[in-house]
Length: 137
Image 1: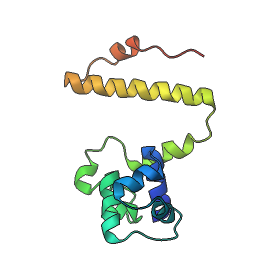
Image 2: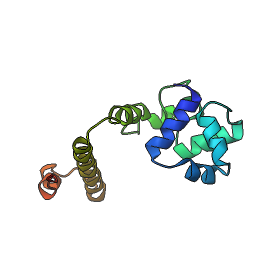
Image 3: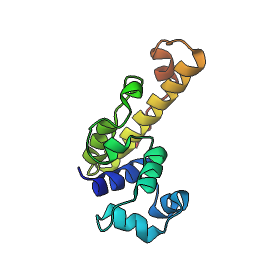
Image 4: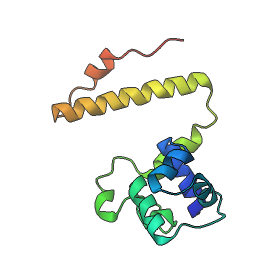
C-alpha cells in the first residue's frame, strides 16, 4: 500500500471527511484530495502532522513497515492498524443485516472494554453478555 492509499484508508477508518481532516491539518480540502489521489506528496512537516493525527509512525505512512505503532508502543497495542484495515476492507460489501449485527458486536465489545477498565480487573464475560441483548430485526 502506498502513501496515498494509506492516507485515504486511515481517514476512512477514522470515519472523518476530507473537510474535517483539512481543517485539523490547516490545509485545503483540495490538498487532502491531492495527497489521497497521489497527485502531490505532503512535505515533511505535513507528514509529521498526519502521523501525529492518526497516531502512527512516519515509516508506517511511507510503507516502510506494516506496523503503525513505534516498536516500543507496538506491544501495548491491542489491535494493529493492519488488522483494522483488513476489517474495514472486508466489511465493505456486507449486507445491511450483517452490518447491523457487526455494529451490535462492536458495541458489546466496547461495553466490555469499559467494564474491564472501570473495574480494573477482568470481570466474568457472562455479566456484560447477559445485560446486552442482540437487536431483533
